[in-house]
Image: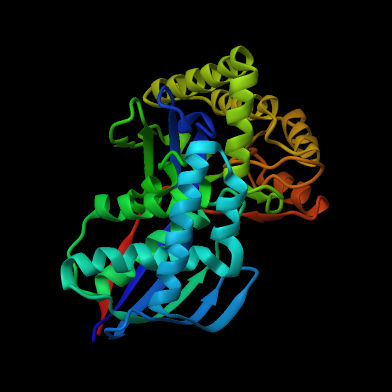
Amino acid sequence: MSKAFAVTPGKTILFGEHTVVYPKYDAILTTINLNSSAEAQITGKNGNINFLEYKNPLYKMKDMSYSQQEIFKTYEQAQKARNNYLSGGDFQSLSKVVNEDYGFFKIIFAIALTEIDKHLGYYPSFNINFNSNLPFSAGFGFSASLGASLISSMLKAAEIDFNNKKIFDLTLEYEKFQHGNPSGADPAIIVYGQMIQFSKKSTSKPSIKQLEIKNPDLKSMLSNSIIIHTGSADQSTGELVNFVQKEKSFNRRRTNKIFDAIQTNLEQFINESESNKFSTKKYIDFINSNGILLEKLGVVSDRVKEISAIIRSRGGACKISGAGGQGKDKSGALLTYHSNKSLLQELAANYHYKFYDVGFGTKGLITDIIN
């Protein structure tokens, strides 16, 4: 049987964290040159999965096996838990099914096997390898990258034709279990790649618009931005989305004011980026304005607010990228810019944070057959 591979990038969000979950608002996202890769090979027809190796920055596991019955039992439990979440808001029970005994693997495999069965008429068994250098629970898009790479490698190995939309749809289906009420922005940027404007103006299908940054100064500023990893948040993306949803219900006027300001920043950024007069100051102002708004929203930890204030006081720009994180310490990815990049690297070291001097605007999903 053929062996297939899939590679998917990570991402960062320039504008639209949390707001993009709601139909009125957009997000701008770009890929980064950290990635996940998966290999899949069909070994039979019993629907069993042999996970030969799984590696990410914190974990390395080998020889995890899941039977077809085990996979679909967890999938059925997850479907019931998500229905309960949608009807009653019980995200904790959904999160338990997804995370207990690596339930998220089984959900991904069930989604892929279900799609393959539509074409082949049976559930193949697979050997699978996965490797990623993306931090997880940190705003780098690990969850969507994991789902897209595993699903697309399995479909490719089964010699099923698919396009980006199909992988986007299947990855979003998985993200609904992982995050409860995802916007779909992460699967979109990871599958389609480069830079996109993502929106859900209604309950119908989302709008995914490829953006091209033509202004050379803005290109240079993006390429000289770095991401500081402040640590994986204590809360999941779904928990933080739920927090903001409750804030929006109880403090509607205040929250909507923050949301509207973020959307205004996004629209002005797009307009200004098409101008030949996009200055360093404008880029810094846009990023800082968005960062401060997210702090007001309550999704940035005390320590990350502290380092952010220092960066801004020294003429730089910063904002969390992703769902953020609450409490005293960790908020995931912090997108930063300063004309003196070494200053950011020194600050990150002082706070014992890891930094990533990444490239932006890389390709999205890549798949192929391994001969």
